[in-house]
Length: 156
Image (cartoon, rainbow, N blue to C red; front, top):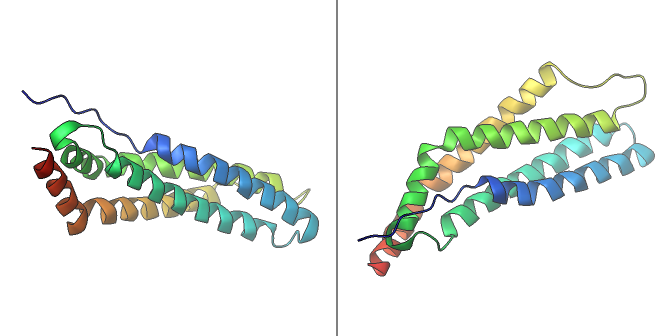
């Protein structure tokens, strides 16, 4: 009888990489406010987007490369990632958009008011689209499927 396959969610690895990256982004933004206040929002958005890309990539690598799950674990994790990519992209985008909003609020010029509204929705839409495409690219590539099937075959 085959052993049950535990789901391996990419949310924890995403948070483990993104939150320190977001902290570094906020620190860079606060330093930029002192040195170059006109460029602080651009620095926050650029470094935050880079942290987002690295975190999504790492979350996918950890999820697809984890050894748990027995004989069919790699295939089940791949199929789970493909099936739930909208949900994972939504979670990644919401977390990153909220952090971006807070970081921009921290580096906003005094009296300029806090960013919000449409810029937050645009940031969410862009981040969701990027996460959706990254997950689809990684989980839908023939190389990833081939590796998962070879791993299942070698364990059986």
